[in-house]
Length: 507
Ligand code: ADP
Image 1 (tube, protein in one colour):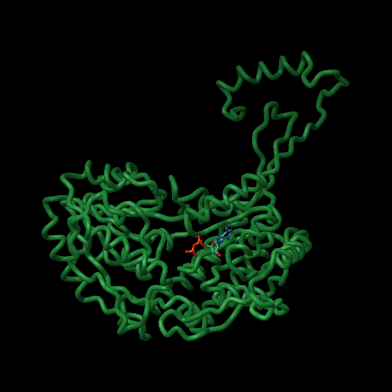
Image 2: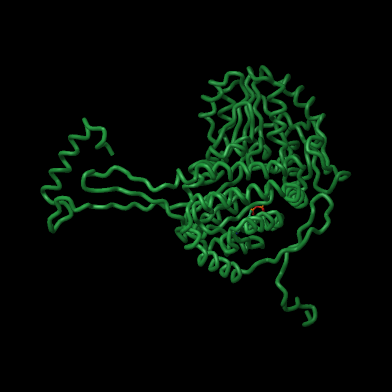
């Protein structure tokens, strides 16, 4: 190799080119930020932290409320940005805006109450006061995926900021512009620039962030989440992981079959199946299997796929990522080679764009097939006939993931009871994926679907560390050479007996 053939010394920063998945047109470029640049961003965030943490919860929540309002006001531009990076339909992009607004609203009203300092009962109530404060961690890092570039990137930032942390977001290298725009809107409502920052780049930029922040939230694949968890454990920093899923939907024989069939399509095909809480396998009781198959075929044939505008005219858009199209194709081929039958769809739609894939119904599937075991990020709906509800629950739980799930039945009590037998972070009865629209409920996975919870009081408390303060009012204190003296021990034993009869003394 001659000197001229070697790669040139780079002076300009390296960049990533972002393309529209529908048209392949270049949307723009973002820099791949180096470990040094990430370090400087963390230093700025650390310097901004004391002043931000010193503001009241309600003051911070009010700024976030203004931000939510501004996103609503600029929703057309936000939706266009999301769609240009992901290829999703207008409705699915709009849902992201709505969920963010709803989350802001929930914490705006609830955060101050959840984070208020508390007085707890103490061992000797007349003497000791037991107080507890929630304090922010400092600089919180967020590493996020491309499937919901607004929702998945920004939803966790809301409670983190309201709790008093400064934040640094490393969005997916496939969809950085939505995050950049959303954080620019934060600055516009008065959230200081160093309090909310974005760093751009791929895995290495993310990894540099994990090395420096005080708390890390990751949403993405289980493989990357595992690597991040190992580094966080090494650094002894708290972390939260929202990872993959293989969510099961069970149709019991007493279900409304039309609603179960359309509910399956909605749960599986939202965002072309590129959803962590997507329905990815269906178990139908034998008694209603034929009827369910007839209905789902009937409804899937009515779905319109495309890239045009219009909130209600198009039901399924493009996929975002060629790698995920290939994964779906490979799972499909594996299933067919093992005896599965494609009832509907099964192919790309190059006439619509390079990453469009048809909604696909698969039957005669079993758990030897990848499509029933491994996460799918595409519009595949494998449907399996089961003997009864016990078999359905057993098969639903026969998976290393446990994110979401659904049961269709007219017996709501039975549905709720069966839901508690499913090994997943949430379960829906007669609907799917609504967990995203209910910020009061914690959301997250069990098994390999994750660690930690988003939303609800749990999703706010994860961004604070409790600090306990014990105050001795020195009542009857005398100098003593041990922690407890004879008098103190007698009082403690007295209180132990009194606790049985006096509720006030119970700890
Ligand atoms: P995908 O490849 O489908 O985007 P990943 O889980 O790999 O799924 O990516 C999710 C996010 O994690 C992205 O923002 C990506 O840049 C980031 N990422 C990938 N690898 C690493 C890593 N080793 N350390 C930190 N972040 C990473």
